[in-house]
Picture 1 (cartoon, protein in one colour):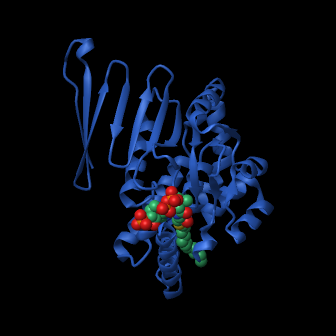
Picture 2: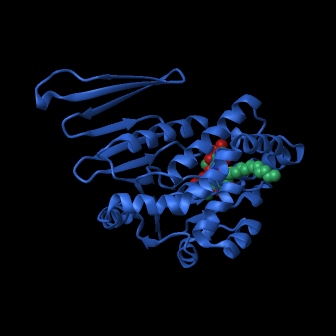
Picture 3: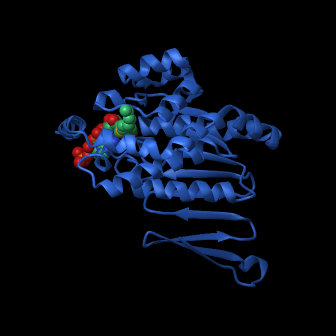
Length: 300
Ligand SMILES: CCCCCCCCCCC/C=C/C(=O)SCCNC(=O)CCNC(=O)[C@H](O)C(C)(C)COP(=O)(O)OP(=O)(O)OC[C@H]1O[C@@H](n2cnc3c(N)ncnc32)[C@H](O)[C@@H]1OP(=O)(O)O
């Protein structure tokens, strides 16, 4: 990845910064005002914007039709998260979706169905890295969930520090068993850390998708509000978290989460191998094929 920053020696009001990131042959152009430290990044899959007054970044996913997490989307997420992490003035991040009725449909199943082995391995590593980055972020992270959030979408939400969800007919949970697949250990650990062992055991086996009320009841989400209010509510909650001493808060977060992350760090290669072996099994390919078909048929 090559990063070039062109910052001219201009008068203060002319100090606009352009950063060009070249990634896998794709060029992302960022425009920002160097003086205010605000920087916006937009790709096909997401927008990252930073409010320099509050230090709160918003990361809005918008990969049509359902924010399915494919390799490119995960790569963009990694870049955006790293950028927010490295921006000194950034203190918190609201993770949300720009698509109506969807937070994220989780992993793009097409990455796992009839895959090319090399891409499959890269896809899984990029997902692992995204999770480690988000779960271990120094920032206060709040998910503003105004739509469905199954499987990988639920993982992203659970990896944040706090979850605001819209009331309505949306579902959130780890539904992998309904696809004939198994949530990997770090998905399971993240859920255990969020809602406890017994509830996770039940939810995982059933592939249970929680409605908003039920999710609130078991602590899978922390606050419910109207659809239009989720980002506002997330930002309001953020200001409470930002009042806490940052070092003390970060150390507390890391004390609670680092052991879970380290479990994957030491098993990262083995986890990629396990994933590849599992996903490429005939029975799993068949199950994924049926599931994709059922999604397509649902539309008629
Ligand atoms: C020994 C143990 C080792 C362990 C190894 C690990 C094993 C593997 C672990 C993998 C973990 C997996 C995690 C995942 O995230 S899997 C993905 C799970 N996601 C889902 O089940 C969601 C499926 N989608 C839906 O339920 C609905 O689409 C949704 C409620 C999200 C939205 O409904 P809506 O009616 O608004 O939209 P449509 O259903 O019409 O969908 C529009 C089009 O999008 C396609 N689609 C939807 N979801 C996905 C997806 N996840 N991936 C790819 N494509 C998806 C859908 O088919 C429609 O397409 P068409 O327009 O072509 O019909």
